[in-house]
Figure 1: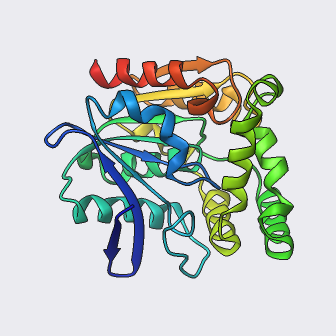
Figure 2: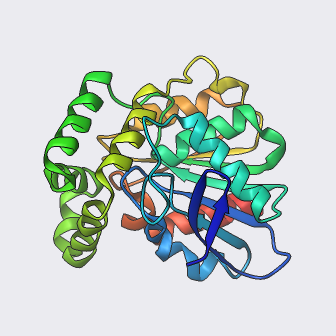
Length: 259
C-alpha cells in the first residue's frame, strides 16, 4: 500500500478505480483497518475512484502521541485529500468514521459531495465505559477487548454462518497498536455533536443496524431526523453492516450516490 507522508503523519492508504471518476472516501470503524471495506470494492471501484485509509494510530498509519480528537482525525482526511489533489469527494464513514463524517459535514462542507453515516451516532457511549476500555487495553493489550468488541460487531447468526470472517475480524482488532487504539477511543469518548448535527446540509444517507448494540437504531433514526433531507436505511444486522449485509449495504450506497 502507498504511504502519504504528511508533515506530522505517515498515512497508509489505497486508491483504486478509474482516473477521473468521482472520488469516494471510506473511513473505518474504531479498531479496524482499510481492509474492512474489501467487500465493497469490486462493485464500487467500477464507478468511483475509491480512497481508503488507516486512521491515525491504527492499521499501518503512524501512531502519534494521544489522546486524539475527532477534529484532528477529520483534519487528517482533509490533508490526505490535499496530498492526493482531491478537491471534493463523497464520504462514507462507519462508527468512528461516521463521527469523522459528521465533523466534515459541519466544518468542511465544501469538500463533500454526499455523506454516508453508517452505524454511528452524534455521541457514542459514556465516558466511564470508554475510560474502562482504555485502561483494559493499556494493561492487557488488544486481546483484553478483542473478543468482546468483535462479538458486538456481528449478530450470533452471522458469527455461526461465517466463522472465518469472524476470526479474521478478531485478528484485525488484535493487530491494532494498543496506544493508537486507546488514543482513538478517547476521540470517540469526547465527541458530542448532538446540538449541531442539524446544521449539516450535505445530502446524507444514514444506515443503521437493527441489532446494533454499539450504536442502536434509535441513534440512527435520530440522526436522520435531525439532518435536513437525510435518507434512512435500516439493515437486519449488528454493527459492521457493510460486512454482515455487504450486498445490501453496497446497493444502498450505489442507489444513494447515483441519485
